Length: 134
Ligand SMILES: *[C@@H]1O[C@H](CO)[C@@H](O)[C@H](O)[C@H]1NC(C)=O
Ligand SMILES: *[C@@H]1O[C@H](CO)[C@@H](O)[C@H](O)[C@H]1NC(C)=O
Ligand SMILES: *[C@@H]1O[C@H](CO)[C@@H](O)[C@H](O)[C@H]1NC(C)=O
Image (cartoon, rainbow, N blue to C red; front, side):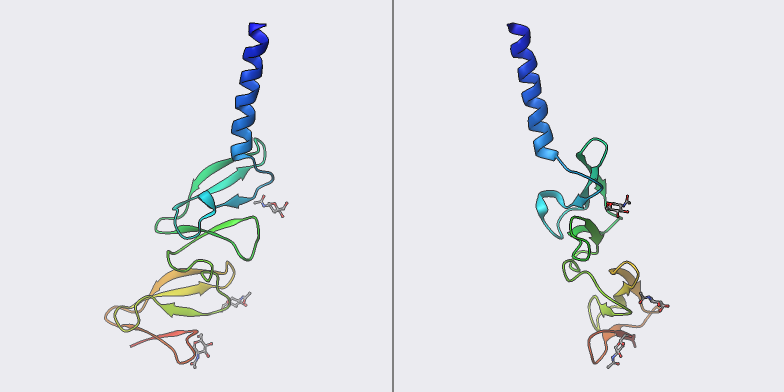
């Protein structure tokens, strides 16, 4: 009697853990489903069916990937959701105040950090889709 009760309790706690972290396939998501907050993302381990916490690259945060539902992506803070980009677009981080800008990496659809040559500031171009340094 005691042994059965104990086994049932163990099964119940395993089920609780599984339902809390259950996932299938190789999908990924952001902790608590929140965009632009966490420097980690949850990667499904398809073998165990449980999420594993993974680190974004230094300085990046987790976003749901709008181009790939069910998957997370990491990007620079403040770029997410609209953090995805297409083509050769770029935007200044602080127009006229620094040379820093974000350049779209057209194959990944994410912005990457870039910088004007030393001493030059970044300006958004007339259409707002590109930058120039001056
Ligand atoms: C993840 O799963 C999708 C759908 O099954 C598959 O197309 C993709 O190649 C997988 N990616 C990796 C890294 O295993
Ligand atoms: C990405 O940019 C490179 C270099 O400008 C270009 O050769 C390539 O065709 C572009 N790819 C896409 C998918 O736009
Ligand atoms: C702004 O920059 C983008 C990307 O280089 C370019 O495609 C676009 O034509 C530029 N717009 C203007 C008005 O110069």
